[in-house]
Length: 314
Length: 309
Image (cartoon, rainbow over the protein chains, first blue to last red):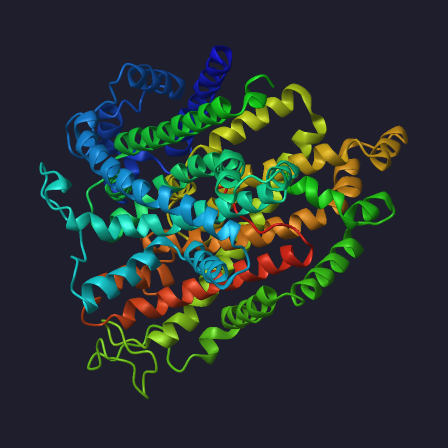
């Protein structure tokens, strides 16, 4: 197990290196000069030169990359170009806001999806199963901003139960006004739920048709025991990797959801950084999100390996 | 895993008929697929929806009752009526006309972007899988790195640097989709390259590009068709999300995503401004998904449960 963890950790190192290189290449070497992006068209050559020197853009690319990665590893992400303060300071409150939203959505979506997935898998092709299948297909097909708009129209405009935007004052925690979290979290939950539910259902159906389940039923075990001893543990294995894959998807979903509801998290910060052409901030936030994704995948792989010895020794 | 399942079915017979070549194989496959899709309920609902939107994409602005940019400034934010079937927006523009005219840009971007991603991914995945060894290892690590961005984030990053335009959105979607497609095509190639007809081609002394594109590629058409239908629905989601974030087609041209984001301010008084384009995006993606599920069911494959982005 230790060897497995070490191997996976070194792979993450490689992945993050590729990711940081990709971020760097995309933001700095693709056509489109950062200085011109900041000053827009019509900047004089001297102004451009000043901006380039401020950002250290006059140094060769490989040198800038190495110093960026070097200080990032030490936890120093540099300064935001627009806000003139350390990026770590800008990012910290946003990160915790996003984490609150994500955890909230996850805690609702995952248990509900697993329970209903098992239920529909056992009762496949009944009316309840069909209705839930169709509902989940529709949920998967809707982009987050469409779901969000529907929820706002229903719960804010029509019923007036919940606020339609989730603006919070800087420095205050969203937990002081939990009602603003409900609609964004519900939007995120919808699609998450649908994916995990469909995956669980498919795995339960597969497990139900296996020989070991047939044996368990034929030897006279009560159905409840068959379900919880044999079906569910086996069906959960592939579901775990889907849950992990959905963490990555949810990080993307946060960008949309936070912008629909004007919720000050990382996703909104990404868009603000792109709009204000704050390249250092954009690079750091992107790296942070990619790293979160990589580590959540690692966590999933470890759970998977802990539950399934075949992977560990492969 | 999916690729392996596809390789097992009736398609292996085709693989063994080494004579089947590109053009004929593609045409036959497409005709088979559509026929197959129509045998399932999902396909019977999905195909007409997709055809409806394809028609709108081609001649939507010609069919529309008004011009997409024509402003009726005395008729702002009007509810649906006989004159404006789906109401008007904040500039008094007819929403129905804007949605009809906007179909072209989103569908052309999604189709072109998905196609680009499929082509790039196919070339990368097949060459890498065929070559094997160190090259394969390095190429797939790079692809893994690209896949560890949430796709919207990668798209945002690329598009910000390139600047928003039709071509750049297509390019962005193509880049974002490359690693996922490459992974699928690589595994299909790995399975096929051990088959006898590939080995015999190699013994004949055919060059690698010939073997990859003339021997292996025609036999991956079923994998490609399924992959393309999945990618198309992702592309629509991605393109409309980018539009929503203001990185799509620039105003005043109608963009469904942007229409929704601009309507946020009026959502309490004039919900139709948001609901109409939202319904358009939703029904288009549902249509594409149903069609692709129909294709799978018809071939007896499991439904798609994963979301590999």
